[in-house]
Amino acid sequence: MEALHYLPADPTIVETIAGWHQEAWGHLTGRSQAERIREFDPQRESDRIPLTVVAFEGERPIGSASLLEQDMDTHPDWAPWLASVFVLPDFRRRGIGERLCRRIVAEARRLEVPRLYLFTPDKAAFYARQGWQTLAREPYRGEVVAIMQFDLHLHPREA
Image (tube, rainbow, N blue to C red):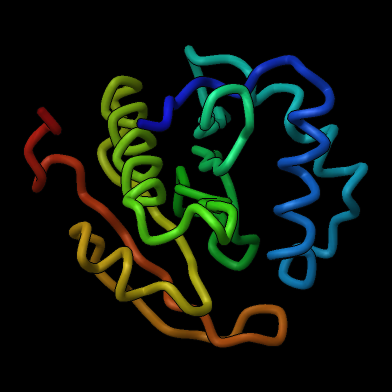
C-alpha cells in the first residue's frame, strides 16, 4: 500500500512534483516551474495552510495533493482550496487520488476549516463521488471549469 506523507524537504522530490504540476496545469496558472518550486517552500509545514501531501510507493513519489489558501484568482473570497491532486498515470485507478483527497479533507478538519473549494476542468464526476457539490461551471483561463465545494460539517469524519 502506498504511504502518504507531508511534502519532504528533498529538492529532487519537490522538483519532480513541480514538474508534474507544470505539465498538467501550467496553462491554467501562468506560473513557471521555478515559481512552482518556490511555492512549495511553505507547503512543507503541517500545522498551517498551505500544505502538501505526497503519495509514495517505497521512496518514489507517485502523487500529491495540496491544501492552499487560494487557488482561483477570480474567487478571492472563497478559501481554502483542495488543489493539485495528481497521480502518475501508471498508478491511476487504484484509489490513490481519492486517498489523497480524503487526507486533505482530514487536514482541513484538523485545522478547523468548515468548507473547502476546488476547481477542475475535467474531473467533476470524480469529486462528486466523494461528496463534493458543484457550485458553478464557468470559463477560467481558456477552459470551462467546474467549481466545487465540500462542507466538512455535512460529512462524517473518516474512520
